[in-house]
Image 1 (cartoon, rainbow, N blue to C red):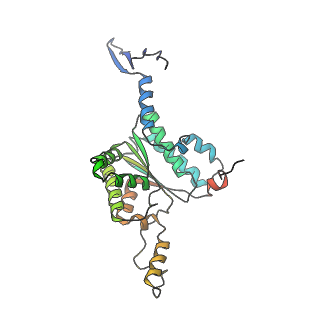
Image 2 (image 1 turned 45 degrees about the horizontal axis):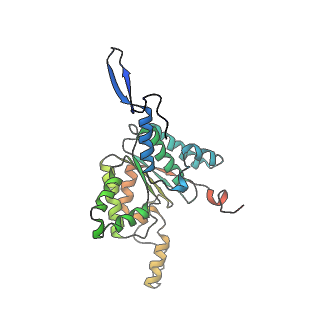
Image 3 (image 1 turned 120 degrees about the horizontal axis):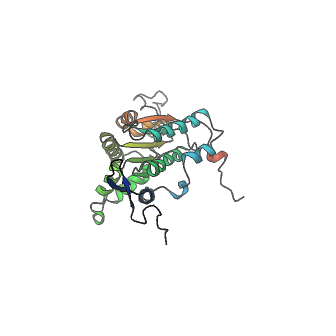
Length: 264
């Protein structure tokens, strides 16, 4: 059995007396903590990342590069200023794999849930789209709308690995709808991507051998689509520049350097 709160005796409310002698009831800290625990449980944070916090990031990356350390400073500043100073703006973490972008995003999410009473949810971009697509069958009527509502209306959305999917009109229309809806309602979004934050390339690509076969040209073009703008298109890329502060990270792959799998 859980212990009864010594402040409110389990009522969830405590009585506060004003200077003029009148009294009013407000939520006890135990109720606030229970609510935060429920919200955190529903935030879909993967088990692998349950330990993540801004403090643990600082400990793990104490010898990191200047840009990686700066990303932690920006993350702390964001949490300290939320929601007044952030004004609906979010963060876009970009950089190669293994720099801790997801760690920072989840650290921010947990901080705002536990310290600011925010609601939030974590979705890997590809997984979100796959789950939305799976709701199309008649057995799940209304499930897509309910899932979209949760993603769009929560205080903070973490969208992980943006651009790590095979492009299609449906996927980008859906992504654009989610981001635009959150932008219009001044709701902050934290995004991570392993692709560099560059606009789409110009239509004529000098690196493509125009005398090669059509299939070879397409394969070469695909290899060159390594920027976020190329992958997600100009419309979404432009919107991200307006709704998010870009945090560019550079350095060694922390997973390869420190967390390489072993049985030792």
